[in-house]
Image (cartoon, rainbow, N blue to C red; front, side):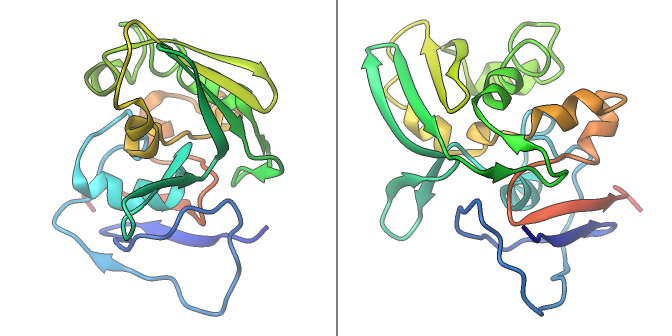
Length: 204
């Protein structure tokens, strides 16, 4: 699998790409577009701003896709989903998905990245952002390698919308575990999208 590169120095990619887990190599040069500010943290749970989403949308994919032309939800990292009960949604994770570092992506990545190491719990580094946009989230549990369930404290009528938005973007767990710090991870986020981060120098 080949990925085009994003170089984050003073500039950042700002165009949107349709959700896909297969990036096709081509001969186009890297696209560089100046913006008013470059984010200090590329993890969706590390910083919430439009400028952050312009980059993260191309690097880290969502579980459910959103078609801006039709207004409908579509498969992305998850191929299908269903409500098990009023507070539980089950998603089937796409098979043969690779992270930018070559690791496999599966349901255990989803469970870990929504767990206490990154998101859930007041001591989690992404809690400040996550608690605002996931106020009803109780638990994320992998049933097997390609099935994961999101459980909420109360029925959440917009949970599928959450999973199709920036808070539904899921970085790769193995790469996250290898990061030396939350700050270092924010400059080198690893995802499954069509672009990967090769360098980030915010404010330079």
